[in-house]
Length: 65
Image 1 (tube, rainbow, N blue to C red):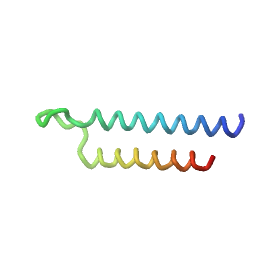
Image 2: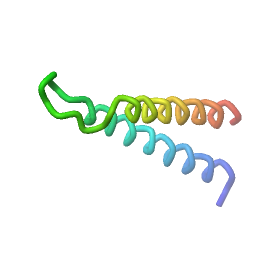
Image 3: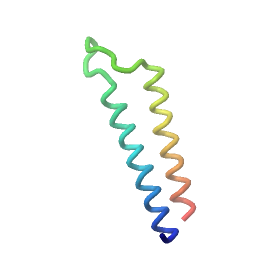
Image 4: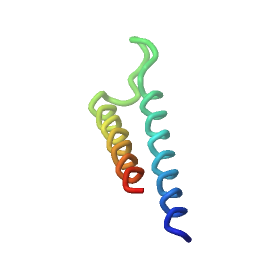
């Protein structure tokens, strides 16, 4: 497999992972104040940090092309 194809596949996998984490984060926020909390705030904060980390990794990979 050529290097640029492999890089493209890695970027696609990481971008999909980021999207999945963002979706999970959005779903974990209760729509109303009285709805049950699915995930405690520290866990949501950690998930948000993971999304930010993945965004940074993607920028690094895309910047090194």
